[in-house]
Length: 567
Image (cartoon, rainbow, N blue to C red; front, side, top):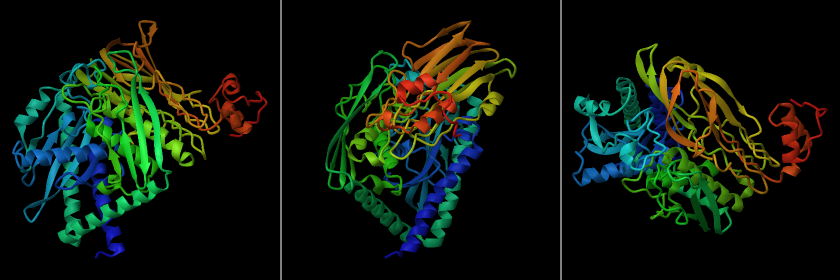
């Protein structure tokens, strides 16, 4: 029996291994989307794929997907479809249907051996800025099959006994844009796993394999017990919620996510069978991503439960066969992780807000704001692919207003500094500001989105974006109003246009001087707007968050320009 102190130290040690992998990955990466925006994650998984630990600095949406991916890898090895692991090997895979997300999220898995036997997998995922396909950046808003989205890799050994396989690397580089830059990200991703191996070896040397295995089992059991205790506080019953994806990028009609969440004793059951059927465009979600979206939604609600496989034992997620949330080959899926997963998490929030309203919040912005720009920079005589993500407003809650410019629901990724983007790419950010007026009205209003405008300075480029909440703003709860929807405008040759699908389009040609303008959503409001304190409404007007007219219309409580500025 392991004493509590030793168990706590080992648990923290496993977490630290993952944290150091996260830091090493970002510090060594070439691409700003990893090095600055931290669109990556690292973790430790059991021989059969069970989650042991994940870094605190990684994207939560990758928690479930990497567990699915490791399980598929273990299965394929058992079946003889994939070569068995040896020390120093690193497998690469991005196949969405084998525990993945979209093709741009590339997973590396390194086996960790103890006394010649596989002890665990060290695994990470990094968002590559390009993976080939129809458009630079991989976000093919109009794709109708996965082959149009880019290069799809089954599990293969990119590193064999520590040596990079140059032939496989050549295949990858022959199918992606700006190929010469990817070697920096590949080396960073591999180096992070080597850091993890070194730190885990140190932990193993200190405690021994038997103690570590016993501790991992105990930590898992405690996490399951902790989650069950949290669930017991929820009243028994079935809670229903629905959310909508703007469109699939091909057919201009919304897609419905219908959730029935049933709480019974210490279990939560999630039924998504009421969702729309598979769609033509790239907003289908593979099962691993849908399942992971449920997990991260629940983890948002109960953040203090330690994260490992035990955390999710009390959660039963029914596979939504026959819906767009259970994509099968060859359905396109480029929007699944960055957008659809956030609608699934939003449905979880809205359902639980009915059960435990004091602990929940209105809907957040719920979009990663995926914007890709690819072209040729004549000043540097080189091609480039720029990938931009942006934050938005969080929903208000019982105690406070929503956060402004928060990261997306699925992770901790942040917008890369505009100064960095301007150094790397031939662009100038003409504006980067708060999306004023975007917070949903409520007793506790939603936070505000971001308003930015980027201009192409030289050469030609193609712009693509896969965003959401352009048709419907993030909904409020308990009488609160919806946040403002996402807005995209293109300013080309003196003419301003809005895409037909509002938040999705691809391959839009830009010349020097053309601009792309984006206003991300604000969060939903919490509670009746008419009950908001008058001094808070006056403060928001004084700060320029709302105009006086907006405040009067939304809150019915603004007293005019003579209101005290309580900044």
